[in-house]
Image (tube, rainbow, N blue to C red; front, side):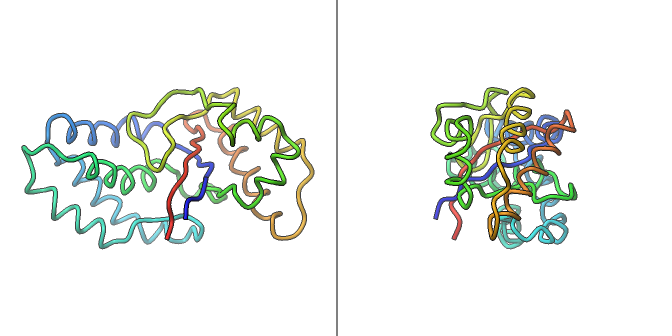
Length: 199
């Protein structure tokens, strides 16, 4: 089942660690940096699991890829391998944790509520409004575009301008507001809209 998420995205670790390691493997067929990052993700998983709504890789997946790609130095990785490694590395290392909110908000549950009240959000969901802060060379799920500072401010204004829904939607909607406030308050953070297939 495919779900759409609005995610906090921390650009410095992506630019400094994750993208260079993936680039080194994709272009130079050198997996050492990726293996180091897989070990880091493996160590982070217990902490990340405290955020119940966050879809995470299994420890076994990290072990499998550490064992598999280490001996593959010098061999070009397949597109499928790169896709799977992006999924394993980028979300745990570049979607921040410990922010006081769920950093990956699934939006399907309240999409009808917000699209009927915000033309801007409706455009974002159907592709009429594209995130314009740049394209990630490597990403996870279907999303590769990140938001500008202006788009983050606009998104927050749209959410604040719509009444908070009652009942089950309230918690998710309030979390989205916190996520957007966090992105607006930290210049290292941006937003990524992506769709993930979950079991």
